[in-house]
Image (cartoon, rainbow, N blue to C red; front, side, top):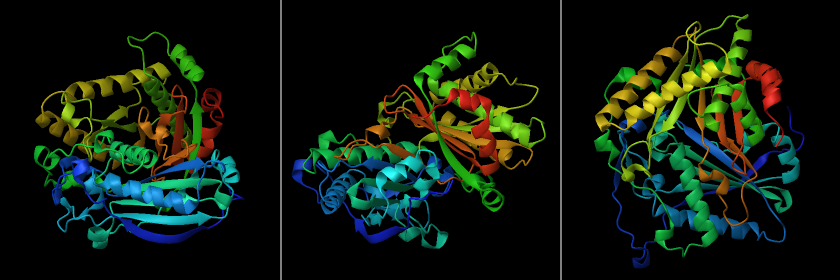
Length: 453
């Protein structure tokens, strides 16, 4: 779909935002000048990952854009006193972050399109959101000078809306960390920079670099650049679309699975439904032949381990769990796919409660299994990431909550799940190769179980 309303985005300025001067009132302390990266940081994909939040603006409550930028910059500066690694840079050895407050890059931009016109198109073609992501030159030669966090704030014509994009270095900042960063920033922006530090429910900076030290296993590290990335970019155009699965549809899905020994969560139901539909699409592409299919499911370890200190840990603290569909071993009914998904994830969760050595071994095992399957050209590969229960819909910087969200860079077949505004339904952002998307959008099950928002 080609937009008729989105024109070129003009970059107005770029500047670095550093941490707010500390005060005794805030009870701030000197931060370490070095932040060690962990095994989980090391095996994360080495790339910047953006998210974009779109805000409609009411003329009666919206101050001048210059005041908005000042509010955002000051609140970001205040937050950085509590999230010091985000303002740092990679050390030359790539094993740690130099925390000398080099700053977060803040970009001001403007687009000559009305927000309501853009929103009308973007509801159907979420790829339009990519234009609002900052362009980042992330090469090995300039890693030590590349900001770990880049923000771009784009004003729509006549002050009708704003796009706020945050792009974070995945090798340091996982999805939980990035979304919590946005949420805490919005809280400081709305409440004002005089907010007491106790009101900022920020991160703990556990010594993961020591608890989970980096590995020297070069074979294990091959996957930090997915082996299929170049193949996808060379041979397939990636597109994204939004689908809404409301509470009544989720109830209908629950009825359709029949009798099972557990009550599936809405996330389990939706992932199983989407994965089954995509496996059928892959089968159609392969002339009716079912192939093995790998579903990678990132699992946030915060809250899975019986230690309160890890619940707000900064950095990467998640494991990608491989769920393997093998024709002949698993049926193609929704119940079959759901049971496979539940069995694998539940066993993984049970393993997470053990010692840190067990988690380290399990993460290494899963990482190698995913790598092995990804390298097999006879296997279909996809991912499903749930952002449900993350407070990203509540990110109110002082002018209301976002009405549209976009995630990622469209690099591989992937489903992003997040809550509807009411919190009972699920919005799905599907990133698929164009030929798959053409079939997915027309799939009878997808059409019958999704709706317009």
